[in-house]
Picture 1 (spheres, rainbow, N blue to C red):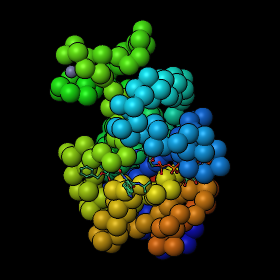
Picture 2: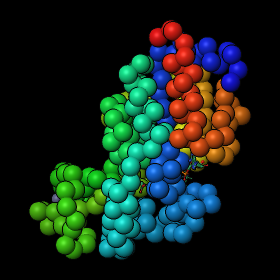
Picture 3: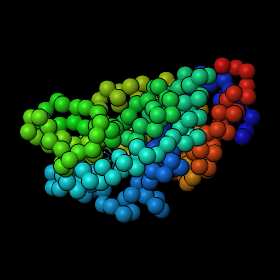
Picture 4: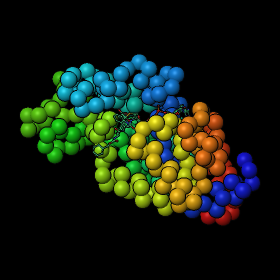
Length: 243
Ligand code: BJW
Ligand code: ZN
């Protein structure tokens, strides 16, 4: 790594991670785009929109139940645990598009779930929201109010949870280092977060096994898997005495 980037990393005080499906790939959770991505096998418009849900709620629920089971059996990998470890030494926040909860299970405290969570349900009509604690006997599960429950995730065409999004912008706009891990940056508005960090003059680092539309704008673009690259970055940060 270039000396000036290492120096900036060592001196960094507030590090914001923007993460996507690629960080959980090494935990056995498939990504969406790319070679083995979910969208190769499934049509997003039939599974990840509110219209698709009303068209065939059972199908959409079965897809989420299968993914939830895979996620609950998965374990955080070295990518997730390294970010959690870094919290002991620096101010860290994680702006994640993932719904898998693996950052929290790895020990990260300051996690903003931009696209919701697969372990939460909400009512399609009333304000009911809860954690899923057991499997459902019938799909779709129903709310006490008589309407359908749905996974508490953000589908295409839906707004991100407003408080979470506002906090994410605030975090991105005030960091001195942003590390973007395992996201294609294909989905808006999450893909705008790097722009806020860049406007604040943050050191921009990307970790991805492939190039993205923002790779050329990074101070450092590491084309490596997250579970390899993030421990290396932590090693560099902790090698200095500043902080
Ligand atoms: C590794 C690795 C390893 C692999 N190590 N790297 C035209 C029509 C309709 C809508 C739009 C449109 N144009 C734009 C839009 C907006 C739309 C959008 O962006 N669409 C684009 C796809 C074109 N966005 C929205 O609709 C959003 N809402 C919105 O804009 O609201 C506006 C609004 C305002 C006010 C009122 C109402 C509305 C919502 C977006 C919701 C996204 N939802 C999903 C699914 C739900 C959650 C779930 O079920 O999981 O979220 S889609 C899917 O994509 C999921 C992800 O969070 C998201 C991002 O994907 P991510 O994480 O980047 O994964 P991949 O697979 O794309 O990339 C993985 C990367 O990892 C790759 O680069 C690999 O190389 C890398 N990798 N292994 C490191 N080991
Ligand atoms: Zn209800």
